[in-house]
Structures are given as C-alpha cells and as structure tokens.
Amino acid sequence: MGKVHLLDYAAGNIRSLVNAIEKLGWEVEWIESPNDVAKAEKLILPGVGHFGHCLSQFANAGYVEPVKAYIASGKPFMGVCVGLQALFKGSAENPSVPGLGVIKGRLERFSNADKSVPHIGWNSANTSSTDASSATDSIYGLRSDSKYYYVHSYAVPYREGELEKDGWSIATARYGNEEFIGAVAKNNVLATQFHPEKSGAAGLRVLKAFLEGKYRQPWPSSPADALAKSGLTRRIIACLDVRTNDQGDLVVTKGDQYDVREKSDNGVRNLGKPVEKAQQYYEQGADEVTFLNITSFRETPLKDLPMLEVLRQTSATVFVPLTIGGGIRDTYDPATKRTVPALEVATLYFKSGADKVSIGSDAVTAAEQYYASNKALTGKSAIETISEAYGAQAVVVSVDPKRVYVASQDSTTHHTISTATPGPEGEQYCWYACTIKGGRETRDFDVIQLVTAVEAMGAGEILLNCIDKDGTNSGFDLELVRMVKAAVRIPVIASSGAGNADHFAEIFEQTNVDAALGAGMFHRGEWTVKQVKEQLRHQHLMVRRFEE
Ligand code: 1PR
Image (tube, rainbow, N blue to C red; front, side, top):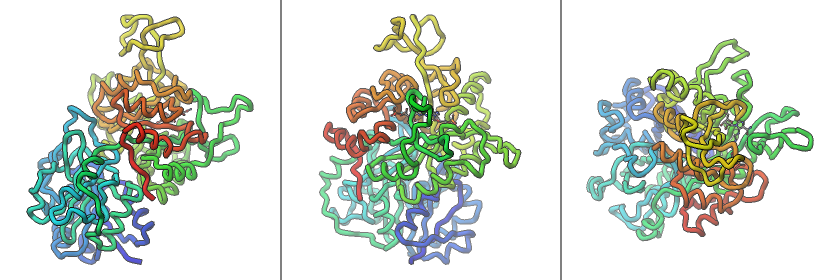
C-alpha cells in the first residue's frame, strides 16, 4: 500500500478526501509539523473556506517555506480548492494575505450580476482545447466529457496562453461568461479548483492518476466536444428526511405537508434505511445527497447525535457532496450539562463527513433578531460563526414557508405576490410565512425578510421548501421560487412537490433556479434519479452523466 501525506492546517472537511484516498488503496499519513513536510514522498494540500483564513493559519504554523521547498524538490504535490488557490500570488478575497506565488496570477470574485455566487455544482475541466503540448492527452485523467464538483466564489480568470508559456497545462471551466482555471499542472505539481473527492468516479480517476504519477494518458477527445459540453449542469439533489420511528430505528420517512405519520395506524412512515438509500441515489447519479434530521428540536446528548454515524458510513462510499440539517444551533447537552455552540455542533458533522450544514429554525430566530437590532451583525449567530470558520459555501439555510392568502396587497406589510392559484376565499394574493420546528410554529415573518437577512449574515445557499407543496407530487411552487430568486444572489435549491421528471424540467425551464431537490418520488421508487436525468437530457437540459 502506497502512502500519501496530507497537511491539515485549517478547518475543513477533509474526511471525504481521506475516504477517497483509502478507497483507492492508499494510506494517509498526517503532516503534524513543518519538519514533517520534507519527509513526505507525496503531498496533498487540501483547503476549504476563506483564502485569508487558510493562508494565515498556514503561514502562522510555519508551513510556507517547507512547502515551497518541497515543491521545488520535484516530489509529487497536489493542491485541492484553496490548496490550488494557495499556489497563486494572492486573492481579492483577502488582498493583504500573500499566496505562495508558485504560479503567477491572482484570484478574483465571480460577478453576481448575471449568476449566483458562490459557484456551486458540477462543471467541466477542459484540457483538450487549451493544453499547449497535446490536443489528445488527458492530464491526470481529466476528461472533457466528465463533470467535476466545484464550490467557490473566487477563481483565477483564464487568459489564453499566459500560463501555458511558462509550461503549465491548464484545464478550464466556464461559469456564465467567465472562463476560469479549473485545474493546472506542470512537472510534479497538480492542483484542482474542484473537489476530486466529491466528484464521483471522474474525481477518483484524477486522484488515482496523481497517486500513481500518471501525468499524461491518451484520451482522444476533440476540442469541439469540450466546448459543446462545457458549463454548469442542472443539479439534482436527493433528500432524505430522517427520524427515529416508534420502535427506535432510524428511518427515512416522508410526510405530506410535513405530516410523516400513516393515516391507518399513526405509525411513522418508513421508507428505508438512510445509508442504503443514500448509496442507492449516489449510484443513480444524484449530484448531492441531503439528510434532514427532522426531530432535531428534541434534546439529545451530543455524542449520540443520530446523524453522525449515518454520515460516517455514507461518506466512506458516496463521493458526492453531503449536506446535513436539523439541530444546527447552540445546543444544551443534557449529558454534560453545558450549552454547546452551533459551531461546535457543525464541526462534529463536518468531521463525520458532511460538506455543508443546513440551518432551519435557528436561521429564522437569528434573522428576526437581525431586524430587531436594525440589521446589526453580531458575529455570534450560527450562520455567522460557521460561515466565518468554514466559508459561506458550507452554510445552507433551509426555509419552511407556508402560504398566507390575503385579499389585497395593502392588507399586510409582508412581501406579497399576485398568485395564479387563488386562496380558499378566492384571494388573489399571498405571502409566505416562515415556520420553525418543522412547520409546528408559524412566525409573523416572511420568506423574503428571511432570505435577504441570511444572505447578509453569510449563508451560501438557500434550500427552499414549501409546506403547501410538500408531498403533493404536483410540482414545485414556481411563484415562490421566482420570488426568492429575484431577492438574493446566492444559489437557491427548489424543493417540495416534485412528482415526476416534467416537474424538474419545468422548474429549470421556467425559473433560473440553481438546483432542484426530490424526495418522495425517489423513495417510493416511482422514479430513479437516472430516469429524471435522462428525460432532462432529452429536453436539452445539461445534466451530469453518472460514471462507473
Ligand atoms: O429547524 O434547523 O432543526 O432543521 C430541521 C430540518 O428538518 C429543516 O430543514 C426542516 O425543513 C426539516 N423538517 C422538519 N420537519 C419536517 C417534516 O417533514 N415533518 N422536513 C421536515 C422537511 C422537506 C423537504 C422534503 C421536500 C421534498 N422536509 O426536505 O424532502 O419537501 O419532498 P417531496 O419531493 O416529497 O415533495 P432545524
């Protein structure tokens, strides 16, 4: 078994990277001090979150010179995400913090004038049209017809020829009208902006090629192919609502408008086991898997958080992003009799294999306080502390809104829309009230107030459920999605109501939503993720192909 060294210098989920390396049959050893760096024979520098935070931690721990010396020695080096960014001179994210300067160029923030930022999802890494030395070689197994998982707000803009003339091979991706560097390689160095450990079989192939030292491999693809297939795909997410049933087993369940009990015997609907279901959806080509612990408002000793083991097991074999929601807040731990900060709770989940945490009830409370204090940011809410430590892309806010019909727009101060599905009394308008505790409590607070507040607080994505639509199989709430998309610049995931592939096509064609999520239709086996994607592809909506 070969050995590879990993440098863990900052907060981040590196468990998935370790899982991926082990899956490929390699052993991971940790670099624990700057003196260890020179002893490594292969070195990977991971990194997620803020450039400045990562690079400052890295510099303060004394790693800058040893890592530069390691790279200069010619031994294999790989940087992932912020690990790629570290190789450049600096980043607009934190202009005062220098990068290693191994590659010239700086990172710029994506423009959000025409698209959501962060850039989250599966995009290309095209080498064939840009690689100076060969149009038919694959660099470290990268293929122009594969897709890779990216999650970042800053990127190195691609300027043709600039780095190639220094001997770098470049793989590019396009987001909106911005072309940026997706991967870069020269001699002993490979770096990827995307996460190979989260990019399914396509990503594992890149990691394997690096570990085996296979810089170039023949791959006969044409530049035309690459261009046709470049760009961000439509993201399909499978969601698992998880809770303990009356027998004490952790089960995947699914409600109708959040009611998860059977009408016949009042038992909790049991649709399968969480880890098995997640594996099944991964193999069907789900682009992400989300777990929601729907009874998280109950007190649980922290060490027994039920989803920790689910995440540990899932992340060992499922190489796409995993989100965990439910109970991400300051939590009283009855076992130790102390209040554990939300950041600590989130850290437990990240260490167990989560890539993002999703915050529901606590986000509503924090947003209400934000307005009560005249939009002052305290820096203390769960959203702010987790976003500060792990980056905005790791913080999803899950919204559970409910329609409130009104006869006229003047009858409420809330953000209303004119609706095509009038209320029970023929009301032509509605607003969406936020709820907490899984819809059990409705607040006098609307969805637009919530999403704009959490965006300001540092959330990176909105998971937009809709209680009226949940479990109805009648399609997503297009009006709600359009309203929220118009209010924020961060990505929005449409959720609730999907019953067939047409509903996914409809939400992507009729709104500019960033991703769509399904639950019941997959759990009941009515549709597979693969079938949904096949139909979308048929309708010329670009989706990621599952690779074995
Ligand atoms: O408040 O931070 O502890 O988080 C609790 C989380 O659990 C929230 O994200 C909340 O949405 C979720 N939740 C709580 N109770 C329920 C319930 O169903 N009783 N489920 C619940 C939310 C909504 C979606 C569902 C889609 C798609 N479920 O996740 O999967 O509506 O369903 P469909 O495609 O079958 O229509 P906190």
